[in-house]
Image (cartoon, rainbow, N blue to C red; front, side, top):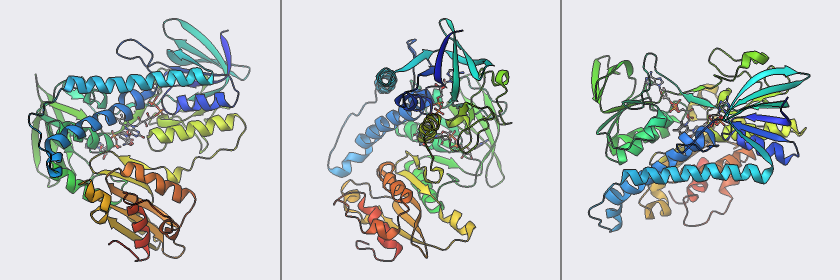
Length: 475
Ligand code: FAD
Ligand code: NAI
């Protein structure tokens, strides 16, 4: 029969582990099951985010940024450094150490909150008397019964039809985080968040990086002005970007890969790379879960079907994060996890989907929340924009990082902030002020009235808010 718990959470990514902790904090008995294993055979909770996503990519972004700064950036500060050497092995070891400490941190949090962690593959084994049976296949096979189940199994890298990952020449994002030598020529299919971030990493470390993007412009969901500024700056940094490019064929040879593509001008072109990364989106993961055993609805694209409260077609079964509709972001997964745990405990909960921030960790970073100018134009909504360049911000100039801007869009009549869009230094941090303002339905005037410390990058927020009514003080 196996153990009985109030809540079984399948997957310990940022959706599942947060849901498990929150449910346990409500006094429920909780099990969280995850199948990930580290290279040394240890349980590796944290999902894609900790093991092959957010955390290792940001570790490498930071290391490669520092390498690039020392080589190319510090001269402007009056510092000359000779003989800069890249020790990629050590850089990769540091990244793995960051990942390992996050894995251990989650196991500590499970112990602290009384969550029972099971290491193994979970699958639905049946349903009995309103309880779901879950089989856990790990070192041993175990059965668990639970009235409430939260499926948080995440996603896996999406494939190009007819192209397989060998993780040697043709890499997924996972392989692209693990290269132990800097390829001379690196091709990347897909210039989304992964393509741009990992392209930046390897370009800074010395690769000549070429990106192929099917859409006519970068970052289709971002504000056009911000996205085109980013595109211009990334091209200046040396990234070769083919927008409107359709990859026709990928042909691996013994030590290189040939990409045939239709360029935006209609010509058929060909390029050869030492490694090729495919980053064309991710696919929800339900394989091996045996959803059909309990009759759980999965749509034609593989997403578990849920309503706006993450309820599936079955009573007591919930699904959150990358395995359901919506943006595939760690913080979106966590928000849904918190809300579902609260709902199971009988509390009111709501995820504010309209105010989920997006960030791309390039240099400069881009970050935004809410509606873009093109959204508002499409909706025919009258708005006013305040655009403040970091060039006019004292702190950004002192940092020698004055590229980019903050743009605030506010309703023309009520002045309510409808969207905030940024490119520039540390905007991944600045966007939280915008999220707070918009969650409290602030007006641009509300932000303009707040005292911001000087000299800080955040003053650009206040100035953009002042700019909505044409009252810049520093521009
Ligand atoms: P996951 O994190 O995928 O976790 C699911 C877990 O469930 C996995 O450990 C999986 O092995 C396990 N599992 C699956 N099936 C079973 C089963 N049957 N039994 C047991 N366990 C199972 N998002 C951001 O917000 N910011 C970023 O900066 C960012 N950077 C990224 C960089 C890269 C390179 C990638 C690939 C992704 C990035 N993401 C980022 C996206 C982010 O990683 C995902 O949105 C997030 O991890 C989704 O969380 P989740 O809990 O839904 O699923
Ligand atoms: P993505 O959806 O962000 O970008 C994929 C890109 O590939 C799109 O621009 C798309 O137009 C393009 N594309 C698709 N098919 C193509 C083809 N055949 N040829 C050329 N281009 C093609 O997906 P990505 O970058 O793979 O990332 C996966 C998920 O991980 C995303 O949902 C993203 O939100 C998340 N992520 C988030 C990050 C962050 O928040 N900073 C960082 C990295 C990933």
